[in-house]
Image (cartoon, rainbow, N blue to C red):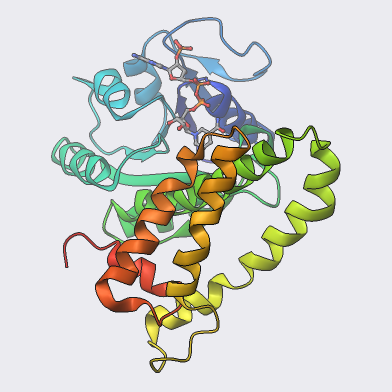
Length: 286
Ligand SMILES: NC(=O)c1ccc[n+]([C@@H]2O[C@H](COP(=O)([O-])OP(=O)(O)OC[C@H]3O[C@@H](n4cnc5c(N)ncnc54)[C@H](OP(=O)(O)O)[C@@H]3O)[C@@H](O)[C@H]2O)c1
């Protein structure tokens, strides 16, 4: 028999996770604060309380709104001998603190960062970062695989959240650029889909290819004066991005902080370097 699993939380994501466990043949117990959610989960056992749901399975997958929701939901529940895989979005410090607390209460703790939207769960593009108890991960890696490709990133329980939040931060920055570009086009009523498909997406895709060069410059700083697109030149041109936005009636709020960091890097003496120098001046604990 496949490992019995419990899913706490039947929001959009928890429901997709429970569906994937059921499809893979795992006896699946579910609990949600508001009863009656997700009637499509045929075959799941619906626990009346979170405590009853936790007691039902050795592997407890938690997918609630935020860290405090997890703490409140599991407060006072016996976790002895359970593997808790918390896939709720968290900060690294929240994950570490929760790990310490749950381990003290007799559980093994895995933190997870889901890199997918609910419709992608169980599909080929989805993956989930895990960190924390390596023995628990090895024991349940195959059980967790039907949700999404599992990627273990280390024993420090905070690491999955760090990887997750790094990718989400990259995503929001990329979306911010795309949103601003589309707003500029809207200012002249240029059709959005055509612009996005013909120009914006190919351009951003090509530019994404340069990120590996930026990363390589971080690992091995290049010789001075070899930058193809030096920051002093980029900072000078950046004013035109802000001025154009203002002139077109577009709020430059999404761009202004990028210009600030660019200018900070130039002021710190990195004007003859390439974009990796901006990453160096982002460090606040140097
Ligand atoms: N959806 C995504 O695209 C996505 C992608 C990656 C990661 N995630 C993460 O997955 C987690 C769940 O997201 P979701 O999309 O499932 O959110 P959601 O659809 O808004 O569902 C939120 C869940 O949290 C429960 N909840 C909220 N407040 C609660 C409380 N005070 N006590 C007990 N339960 C409470 C809700 O229960 P009720 O039904 O009773 O309100 C529901 O089960 C979040 O941490 C999110 O960041 C989501």
